[in-house]
Each structure stands twice: as structure tokens, then as C-alpha cells.
Length: 501
Ligand code: HEM
Image (cartoon, rainbow, N blue to C red; front, side, top):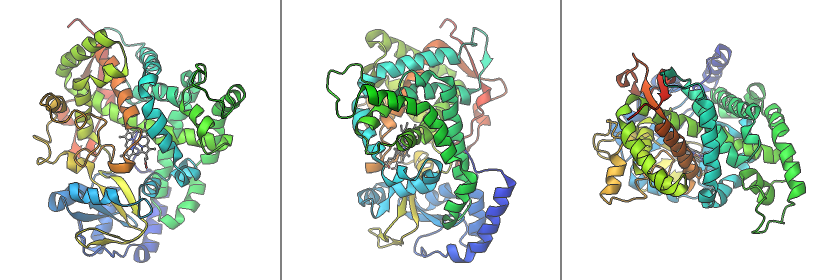
């Protein structure tokens, strides 16, 4: 889950003290040429920075409403983020080399991966390259095994669901199913069915987000120190090694590195094996941290956005029928394959629309750290040390970009496909300046094809096997739309075995 900042009063009090101590030194803006969203006063900027900790300040939306397609800045506790929107500026950003505007350092600073997973993860992000090449290329061949895992996980997770409506703890259930499907590709069988491992992965993720949020309350120079107190990285790596190292040893013995041939049908085809075979790290410690860096935060991103789609389905059960018809007719024609998934236009559109209106809690993504002063074409400069980001939530609700942008219109993208308006562009795994769920450009999420197919496979299973609705008393209107997206009360989702249509 996207976890909010800690409520630990000790940490908050310490953060407040640290803030006061370094206020004057750390946050003098050299960004005067760029307008500010919210208050322009010194005190006001801190008021909004604190408010933004909960993701609900409305600042990004306010800035976007006033300065769309240009630049504006928003305050955080210790620095400023320059927010960029519109084709032209996003394109300028996209072209800048990594050494100048860094996505890797931006992502690292956002999630504190150096401290929560391990320092090497961001020093060399070769796992992203493996995803872009091997994982994405082999997705069609790998889909059947992932799908089997998802089918099994769904059966287990919904074992108690019968013909009476049952409330499900949707967050846990969806996370468990997602973990089963994804870890099938990360570490293979039999570990992906080990319930202790699955629980460990879920706890690891929660721990990572919590620790990252605590570190974020402090200024950058204090991060290494704070991390010593708030992270359990080495301990967690050691625990992860208990699961992963026996596999590494067994596989190294059976299939030594550099002995891969085309006809080795029994050689595992999963991320762990790709790391063992071709990764630039060889120590068990490093390989384990690399695997965990995919689980955190990848699995969380998949399950939280899938949960949004499930929530929309429960809120609008009238869409079950057309979705069911599509899934059943395609599966009847082609079985459960990647081809089938690719052709589920309505399901794809439904999910994309849920993601469009759901998006993320901070209201920002594509975080770039400025490593060398950067000048936009209008002459405005963002000096080294600041951050640049894009505002997905605001873009996704822009009436100039989407008809009835604040209305949930689940088949809008399927309709556009039907009208011949860009098949690939309308897919849920697409990325563009108007659809920023996965970022855009060369750092656009490399896991998006994998994430999307997993999400579709899970939702398709639910659609064909169960009826879904919101609990009485919970209505669509009761969920708030704010900068943090639709707020979800997942305990209000009810499921029962599908009744006759
Ligand atoms: C629905 C699920 C997901 C969402 C919404 C999502 C979103 C994102 C976003 C917004 C970015 C930043 C893009 C940018 O800065 O331009 C990103 C990057 C990344 N994501 Fe995902 N992601 C998801 C699933 C996954 C999964 C499952 C994995 C791994 C298995 C993954 C691995 C990565 C990596 C390695 C990067 C960094 C890429 C780079 O810097 O070049 N993501 N993701």
C-alpha cells in the first residue's frame, strides 16, 4: 500500500525540531522566477509542506489549475519540487541525460531505497535492464505459469466465499494473490507457494514504506543517521536470504553460469535465474537484495492499483456483465493466454480508467533530481539539488485532455480503440504526457507490461467467478476525490459466488 507518513509522535517531534533547526539554512529558494502554488510566504510554505505530508494539501491541483503546461513549484519540508506538465516541457525533460536530471536518484530519494533495500540497488539499476529485455520479451511464454499461479491463489484466497455475500479484507486478499503471481516470476516454484515467504514479502514491503516515510521527515544530510535507527535492512536481508540462498546454491550446482543453451527445458525461467546467469552481481547477499528490490515496491504498486479497480467494480456492478461476456468469449476462443489478455479491450479500458482516476497519493511522479543546473527552453533555471516532477492526478482529471474527466467512464479507452484512435496508445500499459501512471520516456516503468497483465488476469478471474458489490451504506459518493485520488474503504467490498446471469 502507499503508506502515509508515520504517526509515531517521537519521530514527528524530532522531525519538527530538526525542521526548525535547519529552516533558515536549507530552504532558501533560488527559484524565484518559478511561481509558487499555495502560499508564497515563508511560514505559509511550511504550513503547506506539513499539510502535504498527508497527501491532502491540494497544492498540486491548485498549481496545475493556474500554471498548467508551464512550471510551478511546491514546498516540501526541506526543499522545493518544480512541477512540469504539458507535451512540450515533458518532452524537454525526457531528452535530458540521466547525469543531468536523474530519475534513478529521484526515485531513490523518494523511496530511500539505499536505506530500505540496500545501497547497490540504485548505484547500478541493471535489474531494470533485465526487465526491459528478458522479462518483457518473454512475457507471452511466461504468462501461462503466472496465470496458473493466479488461478490457484484466487481459489485459496476466496475459499470461504459461497453463494452468500461475504465481506473480504480486500487489501490482504489482493496482495496475497498478487504476490503469488509475481513471485512465480521472481523466484519460481516452490517458493512462490510458501505462505511464510509470502507473508515475509508483505511485511518487508510494509516495513520498507514505513522506514522510508520516517526518513523523509528529516533533511537529506541526516538520512544516513536516521536510517540506522529506523530501518532493519540488514536483518531483513538476512531473513530473505534464508528463503533465497538455498535456491541460489541448488541452481548454481545444477545449472552453472555460462552453460545456458536453447534446449535446457528444465532450467528455471525466472528473475532469480536471470540474475544468477547474467547479472553483474554474484554474492548471495547482493542477489537477495536485488530480488527484494523488485518485490518492494513493485508488488505494492500492482496490488494497490488493482484494489482501486476492484473498488470501482464493486461500486459499479452493472459493468460485470459486459466484462464477463468479453472475458468468457475470449477465453473460450483462445484459452488463458497473453493473446487473450491483450484482446480484452473492455477489461483493459476498465482498469485504465480506474488507474486514471486513482493514481498516487502524493499527486506527483516522474521525480527527477537535478544534478546539474537545468534550463528550460523559456530560460527558467532549476538549480542543482532541487527536484522536478509531473502531476499525474491533475493531468488525468483535466477536462481539456479527457471528456467528462471526473466521470468514471470505464469503456472510454475501448471506444477510442474501436474508433481506430491508436490501439497501443489506448492500452492500460501505455505511457504518454496525458497518461502518467507509469511515468514516460526512457525511465517509464519497465514493469508495466508485467504489472498490467497480472492485474488483468486477476480481475478477469474475479469477474468470471464472483459477483462483487459494495456493502450497504457504502456508496460511490462516500468516497472522496481529492489530491490523493479516490479514498478506498476496502472492508466494504462484498463477494459471492456468481449467481445466474
Ligand atoms: C501498477 C503497477 C506499477 C506502477 C503504477 C508503477 C509506476 C512506476 C512509475 C510512475 C515509475 C517512474 C517512471 C519515471 O520516473 O518516469 C516506475 C519506475 C519503475 N518501476 Fe514501476 N510501477 C508498477 C509496477 C512495477 C513492477 C511490478 C516492477 C517490478 C517488477 C516495477 C519496476 C520499476 C522500476 C525498476 C522502475 C525504475 C525504472 C527506471 O528508473 O528506469 N514497477 N514505476
